[in-house]
Each structure stands twice: as C-alpha cells, then as structure tokens.
Length: 498
View 1 (cartoon, rainbow, N blue to C red):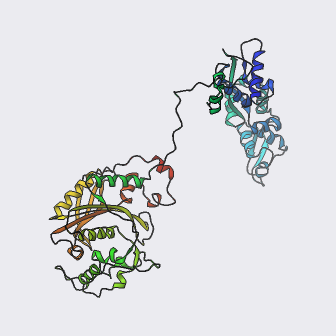
View 2 (view 1 turned 135 degrees about the horizontal axis):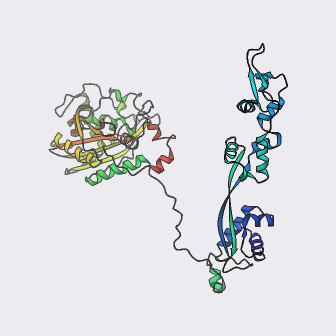
View 3 (view 1 turned 60 degrees about the vertical axis):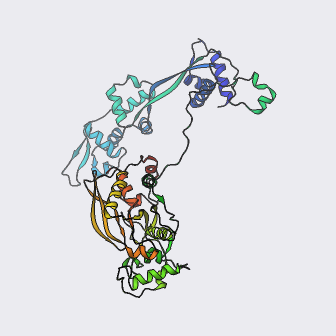
C-alpha cells in the first residue's frame, strides 16, 4: 500500500474535529480516494501496531440496478406500453412490439389499465381500460435516488427488489481513531533480520514487527495417492505381512515361450490369437531361449511326459520366439520358478507380484487394453488344495474379506483350479474376487523342480476391488484422461471391507 495514502489518512485523523474519529467512507470522499484504497491503508497501519484503532462497521444501502436506472429515465414498462397505445387499440401481436413489450402488457393487465378484446376480424385487440395512469414505480425509484429508500413501505421495496429494479447493498467501512502510539510519520517495522543489519549493528535501533508464534503456516503442497496406488499399497502390505517376497516384474515385453509355452498352454490356444494378444513387429522375435529347458517344453507339448500325454501336435520354435506384451504376470512367476529350480538345493519360497499386463480387449466400462494383475505363488513340498484354501482365507481376511466361497474352474496351467467369491454387503451379492489353482506337473517338472514340490498360486485384478471400494462404475474414470483429479485428492484411506 502506498505510504502517501497512509500519511494522508494520519494527517486527516490528526486534525479531525471533534476528536472522536472518522468514517473511512467520509475520509475517502474528502481525500478524493477510492474507498478500497483507503481500506488498504488502514490495514497497512494496523500492521504497524497501535498507531490507529479501526472498528469495522457494516451498513445497508439501497441502490438502483441497471434496469432500475432505465425505468428512472424512461418510465416503467407498463406505463410506456399504456401511453403508446392509440385510442382504438392495437392487435395483440402489434401491441407486444410497443415500448414495454410483454413485461409491460402483463403488468398493465394485472393493474387493469388495459383490456383484451377478443372476437374481432383481426383477432384479439389490446385497448386502454382507464383514461390515465400514474407511474408509481418511477416515483418510488426517484425517492430511492434521493436517499429516501427507508421511508418506502417494506411491501413496495420488496416488489421493486422482486422486479430487480432495486438492489440491497451491504456497505462495509471502518470507524478510525487515534491509537496509543499515534504518529503522523509512518515508521514501518522491519520483518527480516538481514546479514547487513547484524554486520553494521543497525538492528539495535530498528523497530521489528513482533513475531506471532501462534500463527499457522501455509499447509505444504503435497502429492496424493491415486486410488489404484492406495489399494496396491494395501495388497502389497498384506503379502509382506504373510512373509512373501516381491518378484521382479520389469519385463513388459515377453516371448511367447515364457508367456504361454512354459505354462503348458498349447500354441493353437485361442488366447494366442492376435485378437486377444498384442504381438510386436520390432523386435518380432526373442533372440535367445534356454536351450535345454526349451527342448523339455517342446517334448511335453508334442509327445507328453512326466505322466502326461501332452497335446500331440507339432510344436514350433518360431511360434515360441514371437515377442508380445505380456498378457499376465504368471510369465514372471514362471521365470522365478525356473531360477528356483536351478538352485542346488530346493528351499520353500513365497512370491508375489503386482504389475501391468496387456490384452487386446475392446474398450468398455469394465475393460481396458491394459490393467494390473496381483499374483501370489507358494512353492513347497506336500502342499494341497486345503493349504491353498487356507492361505486364500488368510490373505483375503487381511483385506477385510471374510465371507469366501470357492467354485471349481478351468485354467490351462493349474489343476485343480478354483474361482474365489466374496459376499459384498453393499451390492448384496457374491462377487468374484480372484482365481487360483495348483500348477500342473507339465509346467513344473520340465523346469527341474523336485517331483514332490507343489506350487499353489492365485491372482486377482487391481482395478476391480478398487472400483468396488470407491464406487466407480466406469473403469475409464479410474484410469486414463477421464480421471477426476479432485476424486484423487479427496479419496479416503482404503480398507476393502466386504
């Protein structure tokens, strides 16, 4: 705020008679200043300490709107219409075109100043019903203009407000008095202690603004976790609490070998069609596959082995080398189990992964071309379907899902397989929350794992529980350009209660 304005105000306050203070509105008018400019000077002086005392006040004032000023100048619409009507009247369509228009016609009819005569050859005609009228609306607005608005009857003021001719304005001002430290010289307190002040010692003679230890600082700007990341963090925490180790899942591009063949999915399986999988053009093929392991996979597919008769088809290496965007993180599980089999001595493991997968899906409210898969894998000797069901109950209970049902299902690389359902109290129905099973021997034994080692696994999507938790019906509002950032800022902490 300009010091000149503050000094003008202080000088005005010093010579004000009687010494009871002054109104900021009157002071602004006397000094030829905009009132808001003067208010800024008042607040600037208040920041200096006890130089002035400023008491805020509020007063109601009546002002004419732009339409009210028009009526004050030209008359009300009803009077203008009445005075524009000739003695013989006019057809109603033509009367609507007169000054005042339809607004004036409705008011004049309500006041019984005009009448509508029907049945004539030219249709209904608008005629005068009285010889002369008084423009009471214009007269009331003239009184407002003279400052007599408070003298108008309340009913009349309300009618003018309803017609948007009159505005009620609350005028805020200050009543200003001299403070205990009043002075016409503006001495601004320092707000910073600079190195120069310390070096020269000038700080000893300078007034400093008192430090407000009770003032609250600005809230720091910080990021927010997207709902998907909130649920991912919850799932990851559940795995870690159960002693799982996170698998590396940094291969978005996989070969068909690791994505399909190693999992005992035949090369003619529908999932390997271009309508379901994104195949790469460059590089189109993986350069190297593990030779010995590849030969075992080829044999179990084409001839059988390990107690299996296989699929009895001609397995082709060029098909296995095709590169693609992985369709499931089970490809990472296959790599992890292959590395486990290469150890000299087998030791039980518990792995998990949460990462993106890609499917050549048609986009709709529940499907995207990319989504997240959550997978858990346990390898140990003597595991059974009972162990799988028990660990599933333990895992989902950590997410707040305690009512579970298991349904037999089919997966190409697990036998037996189960779909997992949980009862959702909000939806009042059973909702599928995951898939599970025991890896087939045709998957495990070619890797070199011991025959008595069993691997149980389960998986679920990350998007489905997130959508259920946050009440999102369209997946495109959860992922992509249609995400509402305010929803991200306001999303509560996550717990997947059933």
